[in-house]
Image (cartoon, rainbow, N blue to C red; front, side, top):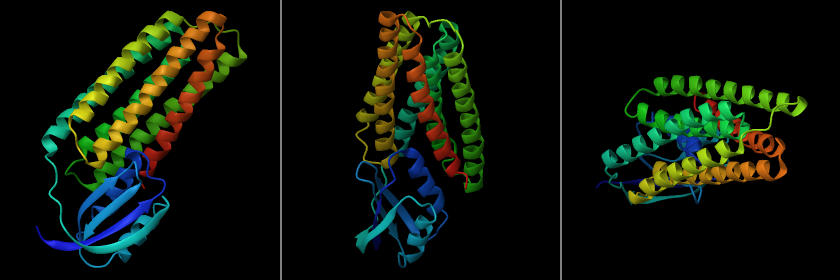
Length: 266
């Protein structure tokens, strides 16, 4: 292993795969950069590079993610982990997320549950992030940006449609959703996310995108629990309001994800 510079940055707004992808696309075209080591839980980035860190600092500053250079030292370039196993696991997680997007979207419309529909779009948001990472591996930055732009606008359009439907149901005398569908389908989605989390943790990878995937999936488990709780409240209160409230909250998360994905295309 050769000895080069290692610059450590604190990135205060790096908390999910979207920010990681933004940073990768911003820096990967720089030939002086040899390796990027992300620690998303600690919001820390180690950049192994040749030359000084000034150019890297300026590039990160353009993303406005609250970056701060902590220091630069001599270090050996780390050996990358085996990507084949990681990609296989991420493909499985992608299949699970996209599969439940289809299932929850379909059953959401059948049962008139905005909670299920919103959760399905949250699953779609995760699928987009995973697919974007896998599709663009080794590809041109321009191609990755085009995919990000299309995906972001598509997801934003779906979120806006969802919000408008929530508002319409708030203002109209829409029917109470079928709580049985909400609870049963969300339980299966919860199981799917637990399997995804198990697969990710099984890899025992320290790579950032794997750690970020674990964080993403853990958040999905919380959302699944929220929809299950909404279904229980719909049953006991015999009201549509719990479903609409959880639907509106999840759509807000979906919109936030769309905005982050769009940042990847800039």
